[in-house]
Image (cartoon, rainbow, N blue to C red):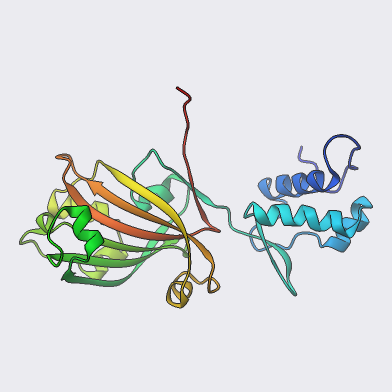
Length: 252
């Protein structure tokens, strides 16, 4: 049976009171006592429930905010965020596959599909001359209808050849990887990826529906086919409050 967050008293000992309160609230979120969009108890309510100082209550809520479990906003208090989606760094999969494995529904909004001259980073990724025509695809990635990331993908010129590029309707309803395999016989089996932190500009903030200057995780990926030749170069900006990467480490 799940114990309510305020049913038992805090204990004296090595664990600080603020840590115990944060742990209580964290477990309450995990067990569904507080769901996404719900407000956690206020500092005043925590003071009354546990007989602690305002500083202790604030430290507990600060800890949950640092962990990305809540956001604090004047007039609304401490609001529970949607759980983050975890992407293991050792596995390469499409966004649709990622979401499906986590019980979420993937959807897309395609902003553009157009041929353009390859910029320097794309040319370097594909080992082609800068300015070579490549197909550029811009899509908003959603999980259960909520913005998760903004994707810019470029396809190697050899992938399409003389084939007709995908249409907006094609990529609004399915994975790009699925379209490539079905229509071009190009199956992505591996690749390499680098990840860095960044903040949103005004346009990206509007697209992801987050405040200007919010943190994002930028993944730059080269995806390769069975012959080890590059198929796609992608730059994806993920909302840092909804997405995180994990990796298993082995000590040699």
